Length: 472
Image 1 (cartoon, rainbow, N blue to C red):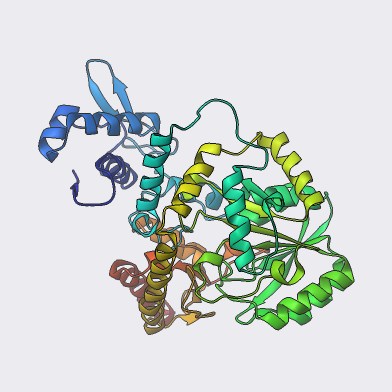
Image 2: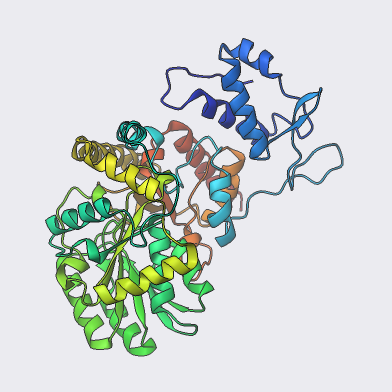
């Protein structure tokens, strides 16, 4: 079966769920196979029967197990499973847009996740969340009704005060809380973009945003990223040729390249946006991971032309889904109306949880620790990739990612398919391109990439490619 670790920060229930999902995913447990009874599993693993009951309930609810009266629990047949002799083998996950938006979350059971876009559980602000939960329970959370249209007032005030420290002069009326940064981007896109509009995006850039804009009927125009920020000559030419309505961009610790736009380029971008009447949507969700106090487009523009987006998913927890959008008052009111039309209010409960975590006294210490851990991970992962022969696009020693390619690994999509079979989730480069053609680039999340098994896998693939080329 699998081993549980009672000393781990991961709850035992989650360990059991993850263990069974991993065994099913690796086909160590076939569809239709009977799993140990609740009491047998509890006895063999030295855990409470109630712990196993909760884990099995979750597995049934998630579609991994099937409960049969008086018979026990069985592995459920899932779409695409290979079951008995003669069945068609299960296809590998497709590494395309649909895979990224859906499969990347369904394949969280893969043992190694260097291609993912989140932090390890024990890097998040778990202690702060638990203290906030306890405080919320003590205070008596109101479970009836809805939150405010603009979100929890105390959290909005706190965000405004934090932004003021970064020279963005706003008050709580300029802040709209959202269900993560994805909803904030969606609201901005639906307000600013009409079908047929040309829209500029970073290239490579954020896949979810590109899919969202295409769904709205936008014509995506990629602005090339360089290790030093933007290709300004290309940007100016695109503005003249396409007359775009908006530019959705990530100047700081950009995903996937982790590049940082310097101050002179930010000024030039604002000048170009003014001259060509282009709205700027600044996605600054990695700001808290940056050890340097850099200016933002919003701080230079003071929201005249810039819509600013932030999030706590990378630093507190992705599960609370608390983000925010900051804009001038008239535009923010329109975004709030769109938010109400599409999903009523955001969750007052999770916003209160975020507020409690941010104000319980250890938040700044947590951020420093997180930045230090990322810097250490960069210092370990980058040299190992270079030793394997990888070219690094940029190496800021901060943020979550490294964008890299190897001369012998020319199709990262094909490599990613092979990695799945080895229990590894990679981030193939074509997912991040406006024109998703095959490429050798890969996005590595440094927090998940300091593992000998990943580097052994990459070394084997490089050796196999070298042998193939020699044989040819």
